Length: 305
Image (cartoon, rainbow, N blue to C red; front, side, top):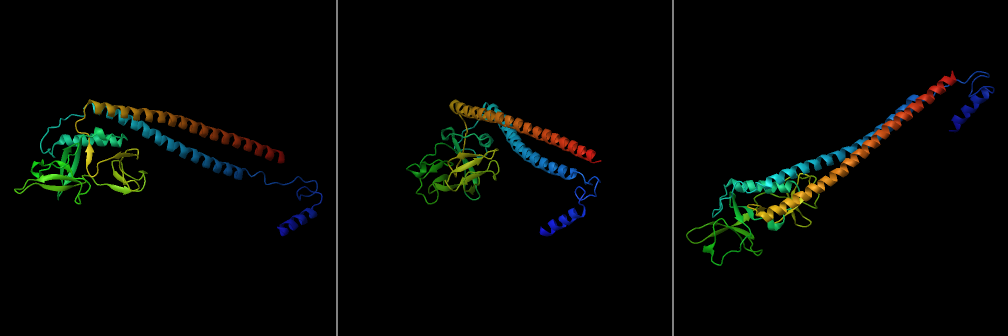
């Protein structure tokens, strides 16, 4: 720094009558204002602000699209409730595992989970289960009964609740009727589950069955990556033949979901408008600044001629 100052001083002493080191009576020679540097700095600042506002707007836009989809999907669910009991369930003992009506009911129940609809326990009326090797699929009505006092009175294909003390499984199915008595096989999960700590389901796939290791609770993951708590594992509960009260309960929950999504989407719309206004303000401001700087630089250049 001292060397730079001393050089400047010598230059000034060499031209005592000039301005900025120019010969006496000669106008100063200038490189002019740094227009390119100023313009580049403005452009870089504009890009930073534009990117930040644009990223925020994209997040809100995605949220708005998801809520709009939620409303449309829930509206479809309301229409589907009218045909829930179609096709009809044909009662058999044991229940027919090949009856396509059961899979239809499971698909309809899954559609509720995917749309974030929580189902009260008293709305379920059937379970899907698996047993044996290779696994066989079966269905039972709820509630699950305790085993009869006489094993021979058990119903083939029915799941029984043997209590938590059973080493080979609390839920067992009467699977066979050999000459010497009935055989009970432990129930195995009909769908696989994943495990994680906490209830952040952002990395999960919609439809996944996930156990929170912190609480031991099970959740089905919705399209919006939220969790709908389910109970009864390793049984898979579903709504088989709902009565009018159950249908009314589901309609109320779906309408509540539509109202909540609608309110949130209005907030998202306002936020999009706000961010759009901010972006327009940034563009207008930077254009005005650039025009002012350009005019000032041109004036300086003109005056220096």
